[in-house]
Length: 249
Ligand code: FPP
Image (tube, rainbow, N blue to C red; front, side):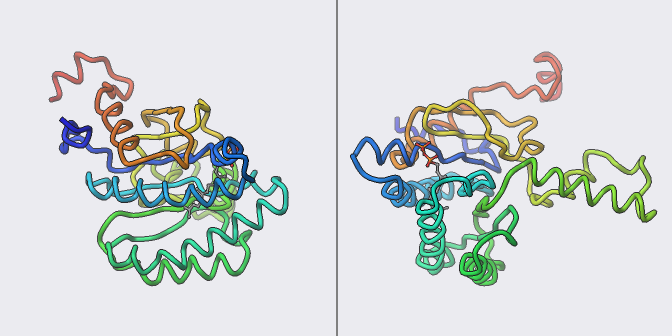
């Protein structure tokens, strides 16, 4: 039985978020520069998206560039931005054909104009599609997002638009970049690093984590299936005890 056949189609996570890590180490192993690894990372993005579409995932969020990544050498940052622009413009036709909806989360104002324009064109082109939502986290960090949300809530309270008692879980979720998007049930990180690196800190409160040693450019469809099978083997209790879950099913 293949890994794909083993997946229970009734309990597919609606939303999978991925910290794509290990491009640099992968390139180093081949004696190449870091950008070589990022370039090969694009193929892993294609494969992962296809695998997610195949099993019926509704949202796939990819951590493509964090606010901290600006501190990398200029050559790598410029190369990554260029790669993002080229990839989005080069793939948009095929993504549109396969009914993908492209969007992004993060501080778009901090991105180079060419990147913002390509993203805008991709949103406009794909916004009426009905297939998987591909969400690119670009110039994103969860602390930045939570500070923006907190400032907006404080402003509304100050202006009398909100009462203190209106501040709750739902309001906070609505103030984030991911407004309207269900929280990820599964977070994957590649390359053997076991941390969340400022990614979706609010949204992953109840996510299952799957860490794999596979470096991102080596990540294949089967690796996504393995992560989903791992997720499906977990008991998600949301603070309850097992007996309560059995009673509710
Ligand atoms: C982390 O590996 C990866 C990144 C910071 C960039 C991810 C970008 C891509 C996969 C390319 C394009 C993506 C899209 C969505 C078009 P690292 O450089 O931190 O690796 P290291 O930890 O081995 O140094």
